[in-house]
Length: 474
Image 1 (tube, one colour):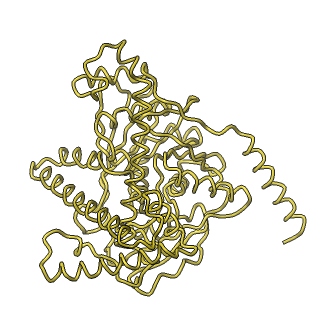
Image 2 (image 1 turned 90 degrees about the horizontal axis):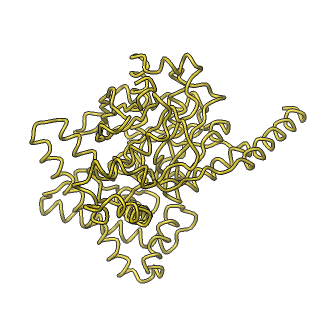
Image 3 (image 1 turned 120 degrees about the vertical axis):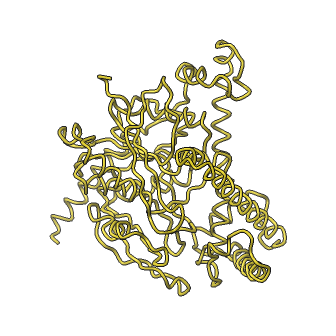
């Protein structure tokens, strides 16, 4: 490589970085009473106590304090989500222990006494190892984060293992109780014999749960299949004729910390969905690489900081490596396996994957080095989609929200949908794996859906609904 080429590259990178640093950071603002008023009138009978039964004047007076308090309450749910992550790490992590991962069978209710005894022994061994890891985390970023979490609960002295063990066990027991409760709720919905009602119940299942960041690859396959089906139906014709989609957004991109389905902890934390979306749009011919811009909306400081640092490195010419371990025991459908094999071919090159620990023998590994040019096109924004909107007008072509709106009730989902509507251009789309209430006052209407199955395991798939903001002519 010539010296002149290297100098040219450095100059270009510095120019991009300087231009980027001069751009004002996108800002969010709270939803105003006038913007929310039509929804408040639609939900008059089931409004929160602070707003229910009040005159319009009284609601308007109460609104600023209410919306700020609700935003604070939603953000406070991040801590409980972090505790859910602690439980996942305890059960499925491999970087702090040589104990085997907990299996789905061992988590099932109604274990036989001898099985329960083995389960308790396994859990106790993993807790012992986790406490030792928290005491001496070294450079393990997950242990370092969890060490801060337990310290925030007054457990900074990890030498006091009895209290720390009690805290870990309490969260494990809570998570298992919640898991059983979710299973009962879905079983009851399934007994109604109405798939639509079951989907509606599933769409608000975690409305009282902590906000978790854990993420997996599979929903991105469902999004690509939906984009493909929409293209076949001609729903993207106007965009293709105009040169492709230019502005897209992802709500809650997530962080791969440790997840029972497909997440592991032998590689650095990573996010997948923003890059998966770019990859799919380019693969399907729905966007041009040099024109596409991606905004991610999140309220998690960890997620926002992770993407901001990745973007900063990209502006200095550094790539972003995504690890893609695949559990061969999961028996993925051939279509999902194919997606896993080609993931990233539009935005990067194959990279050497991180080796898996000896106990994870059923994994097939691959990794993708995503080019800096694509990472730099992702802009993270601190925004609570239920209670906030962007301060400046937006005209997104497409917004993605998978495994996000399930954390809210119907009223909160409707507030979120109104905020999403305000940020979409006329005719723009929201793709979500949630059933959202379509009120007469809303311009957002479902125009199609696609059910994507990932494997032969029960309930292993997603139902992606295509919501469209009504075109100006309608």
